[in-house]
Image (tube, rainbow, N blue to C red; front, side, top):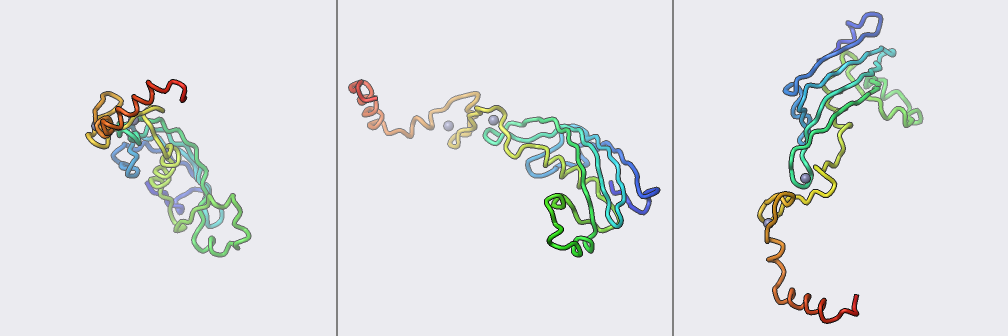
Length: 178
Ligand SMILES: [Zn+2]
Ligand SMILES: [Zn+2]
């Protein structure tokens, strides 16, 4: 959905849209929507630029970083963004680029792409690391078994049996060396 600034009555307006997951998926290579995204907000012209505020409500699906199991997370995000034209951006002096202005985006001066805003905000809202649970054991790199639900002997087989014997000898015969 694009909003043409020309069509804003009195320099301001509102928008609301329900995105079906298909309209935005994939949000990026690790994030997909598992539910429709409800988006609403308003725009206000500021000279050549525009100020956009709004809210997004949806559910995102990611994979566990260790075991790749799908994880669903609720997304509820407020946003406030300022857009200025490329010309305005270049004319603003370096000294004027305060921290506040780092959230300023450049646009073509004609329209605002709401799809892009929604995707960006969803990516900002989801954590950069996701685990299905804090102590997820992951998958065995050797045989691919999910170590949360099963066990394999890959790790055990890597231990040289002679070394294992030495270890148990040490443990049983030297109770004083802790
Ligand atoms: Zn996991
Ligand atoms: Zn294994």
